[in-house]
Image (cartoon, chains in turn orange, red):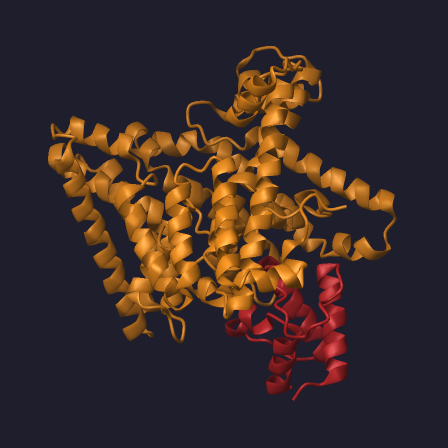
Length: 489
Length: 80
């Protein structure tokens, strides 16, 4: 049974979606979907998508124009609170002069990227051209180290940390752009710009990857576009369903409904009983938590994490599809995974793709070539552990600025532990081959159910350590973990 | 030139790796349809190397080269 009908599989609907009226109906449905999914900029997104629908030949240029519009009017990916703090500390004003300063810095950062992009294209044999992403990361690491270690003050400190704060949200987008620079026919600078924090929104993780992927998945004809847009509508309905489920769960388990459910309850004058389970954060802070409450908090937290990965990023995918790019979903049936590696692939696809593209393949193609199993394990650890840590540490520049480099590194111990166990889990799962997947066809229903429960239990327990806060040590999370098994600490 | 028996063998390999039947259409993208992912690419390439006794260089380890049964078939035509 399907909750959302396969709209894109009905030939009549696909044909209708290619007519002028059909396009208008699809755009109307899309606008309604965004509105019900509570996306603030639903009018602007619909307007941008409408332009791309009616002028498909100019789609990629329109994506770039929309990216520019979002940069000017909706640059929520820039940490304005942090930048204002810096300016205040440097004795500078936080009014329009700060905006002008940051605009200049951002323009300079884009210019440096453009020059580097051209260099990679022109000097293919040089080390920097062969390893552009490594150079990008090394440059960023140096800036971070300089900001943290050099005795900077006043305007110099403001400038250095502003460059870091402006670069960080673009870091992995730049990485995809530089990867594209070595393609035979990469996109030009204008088209690349549209993929850097695109208008459909994809804070930090590039969704759906970079320009090379956009070229691959762009609708080629009116029929393609109609199918892709019907898939977008289908996804919006699914996301809305999940949002209601997510907020209903919040209400039923924690007694804390989200805005959507709160409105519905108010409208219907319902009184909904709840289980009163504390959130995982609350349970972690308590000195004593009964075992059943600890488990309830953890399971509820894991369920919320699963739903969150399927709601926000898939809403972004729906907008991307409506613009004419048939992108894969971010979260695709994770509960059907039979192995740890398969779950990781299904749960948060685009984050995993960043790690695979920039850590897994580079290690896999360079090291331990004579040792097949070691090669696979090392590449998996490079992605799921090292890459995972680098990714998260690089984006949390604010902690480095406030705590200093050493304390920020020490405070990163919990997430480092999480990444290490995750890498080991996926690595072992990879080494066991696709035994679990092969079993899908012939294994009994019970064996498959058992495999799924095992995978979910692994990720659920690991969720205890999926914490990016820097102020609490590993000990507290370790004690909570042991408490789950009634082990006294 | 497409080789039907080779296509069948490739289909069998894809089914083994993905745990699901390969699409009917040889041109259909295995990665875009979600049947395979880049994480599974080394497994697929290893299986192809073993099955067809061919060495795939690391420089060819690109999802696009193995994106569909037809592309894999074309790759093997060029390298066998």
